[in-house]
View 1 (cartoon, rainbow, N blue to C red):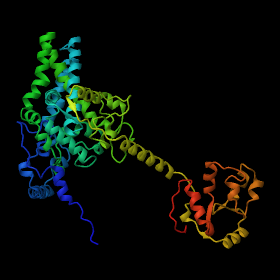
View 2 (cartoon, helix red, strand yellow; view 1 turned 60 degrees about the vertical axis):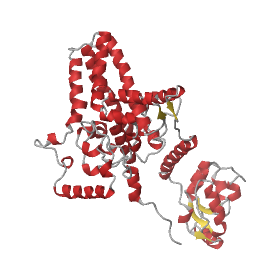
View 3 (cartoon, one colour; view 1 turned 90 degrees about the vertical axis):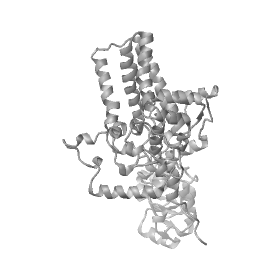
Length: 483
């Protein structure tokens, strides 16, 4: 019979990258605002042709076989500036540094009214990133009406983290290629790299990656925000908080510094913690094959995004925290919006699937601990003796006893036996199965475990009995002879 047809991996990757679709092409003036254009500028009109993609990859391999990309070259006094992504350096380091200088030097004093407004405005931007950019657009964990989507697009822009299109595409690549060289913020490269280094340094184009974002391109709000992102970012991040602080608190400069520059810095750093701390601090209750972790500290600074191990296992669940006491305000925002019809189709993985992951990981940890302990030789490693061989061995070895079809050498345990040496000596050379299993003592699990370390052989006539006895300790054997 011919083998079953397998999935064509090349075609499957074309589908996963969305390269089979002729999607709407949307651009803005500076390409991708928070990343290298060479890494994230997806031109579906050309890239939908896989032959073109393969040809381009081959050209780059040839190009960089002789001339290494700047990311592969050592840092020197002559080339250090070429390693840096200067747009991101300006947006995430230089501008915030100027803001902190004016704040810490006392040149721009902080008014209480401006401080409170800054915290409020910070919350709007943070929620727009977590509930909007992340859970709505990047993961489609729920659906939203256009007023809520527009709100997230406007105030998400105020966080200066790039457009929805760019952010969503990068994040889908992160989930598709977690902990690989194609992961934009690969945690394996260190805490600093996953936090900010990936943005401040020019990435290697050989690790270019793509994900299907046709749904984003089909959203008119995503298209509008991406085309006009520069203006929306400048207005919502800096101009609007300045005008509000000036009009209501007579504090234009304070509004610009605190509600604008420093607020942007704080919300960027909080978001970066999802890529860094959430892959380093905490537990892995659902799976430990990859780096994401659950940690309440990270959740506090990221509007509830700190339960990252759960999120990577169940990415389309609109929740990050599944227990009532875990901090996840983003979940509550989405849930509350559903009451007024702004959000709907909130997705949750079944409790059965969640419990399966928990149990599997617990079992994995138990198996790891179990492997470090001496459970005695497995039956398959023991010789098989018939009854006569056992009797012959007893003539030369005085400490042998049979229990449940397994021969044990208890000579070293005679003086240690809790029931006394006399009782144990009375069983030597005999079958003590009934006595051991309740006839005299109803032995504990510890007794079974100690006994297992004394195994020397299996009695041929009691092989099935031995397998059943071992199964009660969690050992699994086939019905084959133990030899």
